[in-house]
Length: 370
Ligand code: IPM
Ligand code: MG
Image 1: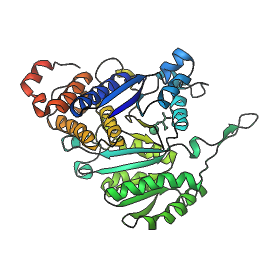
Image 2: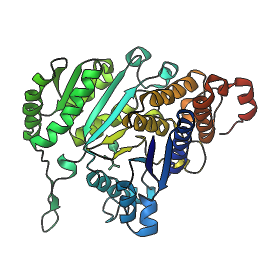
Image 3: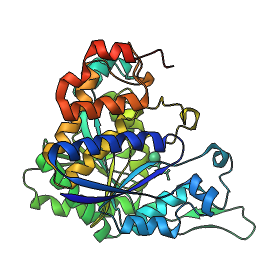
Image 4: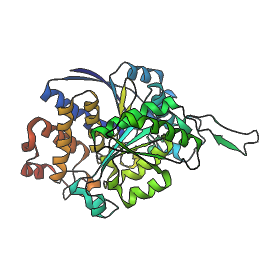
C-alpha cells in the first residue's frame, strides 16, 4: 500500500515524539511491504514564529494533498499567560479541524496491567478499564459566534448544533459500540441545555437502527463523577465538543500517564492522528518525553488505512515493552529509557519480535539518562 502522510510535528516535544512514530511506521512498511512517504509542514507556535500564522496556507495544502496527518503537539508558554493574544497556536489546530472536516474525535482509554500502580485511582478501580470517547469536534460552543458588548463588560459564546452534525458522529459511535461491548453512553446536560435535548432526541431516534447497542444517557456532571468512581462501567461515550474536551482530559489520567494515550480525528476524507498530551515545553529537546502516545496514534492511523494486522503489531510492541519494564521516566520503570531509545525498541520489536528487547544488550545501552 502507498500512503502519503503529512507530518505536523508542531511545538515542544511534538517533533521528538513524532520522530518515534515515524520509526514505527517505517518498521511496519519494511515488514509488511508498504510505502509511506512523509511531508513535513509547520503548525502552532513555531509556524507563528516563522510565518506569522499558526496554520500557514502551505501547511493546509500539504494536509489536503495527503492521505492522513500525523500531528505532534502545539503550544508554547509564551502564549499561556496572555489569553488575549490575537494570534495563538491553538487557532492552528482548530482551523485545521474545521478545514479538514474532522468532526469526530476518538480517544480510547485503556489501562496496562504493569502500570496500574501509577494511576491516581486504586488498582481495583482501574484494572480492565477499556472505553473510548467519541467527542464531536467541529461544532458547538467551540465554533459558535462569540463576542463582547461595546464597553466590553459582557461576553457571549453561542452553542449551536444541528441534527445532521449530531447524526454523523452518532453513527460512528453506534458502529464502534456494536463492534465492542454494545454499550453507548450519551453524555449531555439535557436537564438544562436545549442543544443537549436535541442530542437526546436525535440519538434516541437512531437507536432502533442498532439493535445490538444499548443506548443510555448520563448528565455530564454525573459522568465526571462516575469516571472517577467506577470507570469500568463505560464502553463508548458519545458527547459534544466541550464536554468531550473536559471528560477526555479527566479520563486520560486513569492509565497512569498521559504519555500513553493516542487519538484520531476523523471526517469524511483525510484523518488526523495525535497524542493527547500537550507540547510539554519543559521536556522539549531533552529526549525524555514518552513517545508511546504518538506511536499508538500511528497505530490508529494504520487501522484507519484498513491495515489491521499492522496496527495490532504496533500495539503488541508497546504492550510487550511495558511488560518488559521498558519506558520513559514518567512510567517509573526500573531503568529509564530515552524517547528515542523507546522508539528504537518499538520498531526493533516490530521487525524482529521479542529478541529485539534482549535485556542484557539493553542494560549496556541504558544509562541513568535522567
Ligand atoms: C484538545 C485541546 C484543544 C481543544 C485545544 C488545544 C484547543 O485541549 O485537543 O483537547 O480544546 O480541543
Ligand atoms: Mg483538551
